[in-house]
Image (cartoon, rainbow, N blue to C red):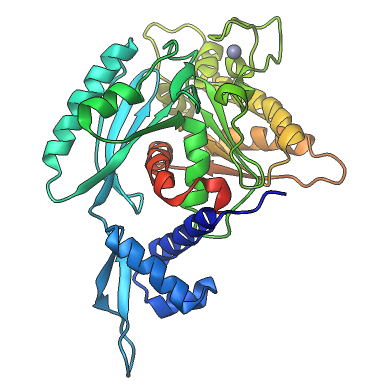
Amino acid sequence: MQTASTEVVRHINRRIVLNLIRTRQPLSRAELARISGMQRSTISLIVEDLIAGEWVLEGGQSHLPRGRRPTSLRLNEDRVIIGVDVRPIHTTLALGDVNGHFISREVFDTPREPSAAVAELVRRIRVMQAACHGKKIQGVGISLPGRVNPATNRLVFSPNLAWQDADLAGPIAAATGLEVELDNAANACALAEAWFSRGEVCRNLVVVTVSEGIGTGILIDGELPRGLNGMAGEFGHVPVDPAGPLCGCGSHGCWEVFASNRAALRYYGESAAPLLFTDLLRLAEEGDARAGAALEEMGRHLGQGMRLIVAGLAPERIVIIGDLTRSWSRIGPMIEEGVRAQVLRGGRAPELVPAHEDGLARLRGTVVLVLQKHFGASGHTL
Ligand SMILES: [Zn+2]
């Protein structure tokens, strides 16, 4: 039987305390002890450690009607993280704080070659480093439309980016002097769902990112399964119709070929100017029947693929991230239908949640990639 080491317990307690401060700040040590149920002495040790590490600041007075005024604690917003969300067309670079708020954001075209992407990121990160006086950059978190082998930290599978076996972390860390963490975008979003959750943490959760492709990030019993070479979770590349169109992975008729943003544009058909998915959403909104039908076709296929996820993983909650959530009233019910159709006897339908603010959800994921290095991986802390 596996027992938690002292180190793991320390990580768990630190993270619980940090998250309590984050969600309820400002608050006092006494309040922390009361809410967490931890000993006052344990709380004091953790808080001193967090203050020494400059994660937490002490100051300001909690207002009590009379008597002693305990010193209040809050997160140090000068601890910042550089988040990079790489997508096949655009890349977003942002400066975020430990609260998951973003101070600045810039978007640029994703270079075609990994070496050019590294050079561009290094250049932009250096500018950001030079501009953030007084703030301490904790590291760089990069989310990718592909899978990262945790053993080598290399991008090993990215059919929509076509970067083969690329090392991004090594050269960026060497050039900037910053620690670089990277992971699949859907994995990062699943970790962020747990990290930034305000209510009770959901231990069985699937995040589905729908964009150029489809990514899934999975938490099972609070753990993020990695699988061999970090390849676990590629539901987007399960063929749902072997006679279907060719996919970027080399197979035919993968789920993402039928249910991604690209698929919806294909359903819409030829048009004089190349359309973006956001154009398609707008057209549907304006009453274009062909655009509406294309989105519904996409929704139907999304629902179909959800059946794999529901049957295989029995999640409590499925979070959908992507531009399509802007048209949730149209697409949501079709996804819901697929989810409900797959609930087996004895099971319960998972809650289906659209994550609004698509870009923000993905950037929060990049911040968590760095935070979890300091506060333990998600699985041990839920
Ligand atoms: Zn595929």
